[in-house]
Length: 193
Image 1 (cartoon, rainbow, N blue to C red):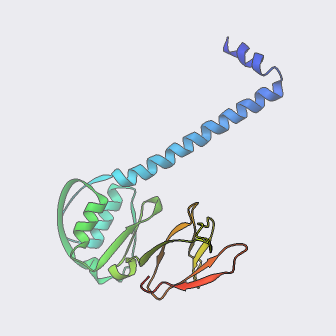
Image 2: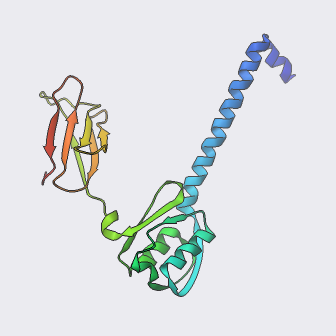
Image 3: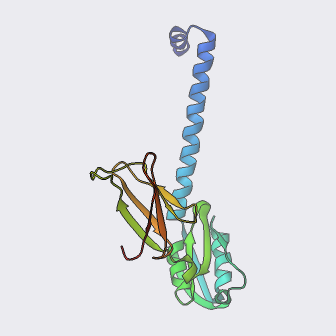
């Protein structure tokens, strides 16, 4: 009976074939989206059992890699990798484990996409200053779509519909370049603003 309904709505064979292709494409896209969602949820909810005594930090990283989908990226020359730690936990999140074992070292971490964890000296991973603001014209009307770029870099953002933006700058000496079609560009040093 269902087949007759499809033939009734799409009597032309080309239209039926096109409809089936569209339905199959939608199904495949929905399936891929669900896989991406489950991968990001894994990284937030993954829990591990770690029990180490007087073990080098680099060996703890290898243990985490063996128990999970996380991968570490670090320089083998870091002397803190050879520091020994003792840690015991059942069902701990990776962030909890890393916070505990790196507390006695001068290293820090950052979790990136695809479950990649970058280990570096704490000062290198430290984020700069976050600058937020609103861009408006001479009358005070907010300007959406203004490009805000850190001078000398490719790092930038675009203002939202209310003219607001937020960007991380490395230091107070950074200069922000504002550009918008039909307006003269402007450069502003972050300073203490």
